Image (tube, rainbow, N blue to C red; front, side):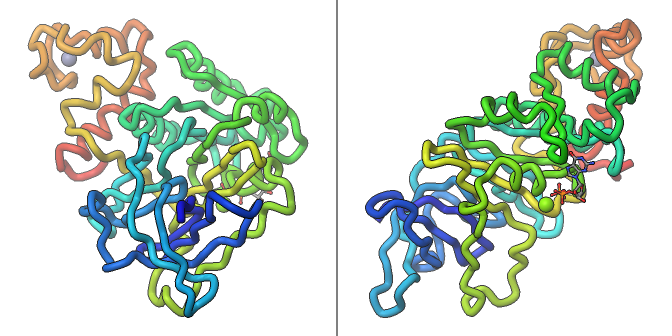
Amino acid sequence: MRGLVIRGSRNVFSVRPMEGALSPEPFSCRIKGKILKGVEGYYNPLAPGDRVSFEPDSAHPGTGLILDVEERRNQFTRFNRKGQAPQLLAANVDLVLCLTSPVSPPFRPRFLDRSLLQAEIAGIPGVIIGNKYDLSPDDLDTEERLEDYRRIGYRVLRVSALTGEGMEELRSLIAGNASVLVGQSGVGKSTLINALVPKTCQRTAPLNEKYDRGNHTTTMSVLFEASPEGTFLIDTPGIRQFLPEGIGADEIIYYMREFAPLAGRCTYGLSCSHRTEPGCKIMEAVAAGSIHEDRYESFLRIQNELSGAPYA
Ligand SMILES: Nc1nc2c(ncn2[C@@H]2O[C@H](COP(=O)(O)OP(=O)(O)O)[C@@H](O)[C@H]2O)c(=O)[nH]1
Ligand SMILES: [Mg+2]
Ligand SMILES: [Zn+2]
């Protein structure tokens, strides 16, 4: 049978059959033979959004074995520092919705820049959602930051999951798409999903705990189906610090969109570290205001991190 992974830990996965009855019950599945070909080296072998083939276990109704994973169109990952391996947060998605809030928690450009960078690396369009707009609609600092993301080409939506403001635009953006929501804890990912997903679809299949001893399912993503027309929302819980993965320190410049056109144009060309060198086009752009100093700061920190320097 063909199935859609809707949640999972590292070895037990909820899989919804993609054929047959309408909204069938998900199966609690393990991987046959414990190892899936082609996905070695990851913290977790499967993520919500993955399409798999599986066989139901007739001896244990509701359970099954995963045989194979279909080739992914894309994957949204981060580096899991504890596990020292890339972690799959979502597979086969159309949009990365980067959630921010102006207050409680305050706007944090680092987390946003890291998730936008990872979206660029994955080749998935990133959209910025400024939630909790009801709390401080006139906050000039956050407005200035959000406007700058718009200037460099990102779509920015302002919403309130609480009052419903701006939600129509968000609804039409996500309709028919698979979206993964990222943002630091407390920005309102779960509240937004509650507002967008009909109550009847919100029960998430409990994983078979018996098979899942010692795994931290709360650190894993969960897929919600917001409509029968294939509107999927994937919640990503519990990321304290988003560590990008999949590129080297000298490649960051290609994945930050206002930096990319300047790649190779510094006096020292591609060997410029963009920190102290004379004739550095990146530093000139920061001085001229065409690169926001906050984005430059994010760039430097990610560069430090990916080159193995102690994280500032
Ligand atoms: N004022 C206001 N509070 C919100 C809004 N969205 C979420 N919250 C609150 O923010 C807190 C954290 O929300 P939650 O959805 O758990 O955040 P998550 O950690 O990103 O999933 C909760 O107390 C929500 O009620 C909003 O648009 N406006
Ligand atoms: Mg949450
Ligand atoms: Zn430079």
